Image (cartoon, rainbow, N blue to C red; front, side, top):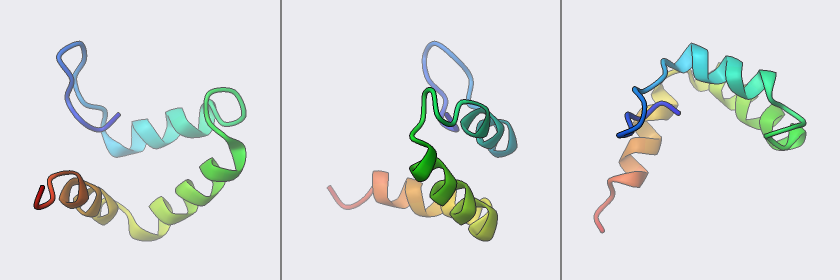
Length: 59
């Protein structure tokens, strides 16, 4: 959601988090959503740097 795709621009972190919260229980598992949003609130945008690092790792 926060990465640019050929079919859409990237979403900012706040908008993406709101979409995840809005669709909790329908599109996203409520338990996973709660944990993810708690981590996101604690870590803020730093979590995106970690995710990008894992995604673009040494492989």
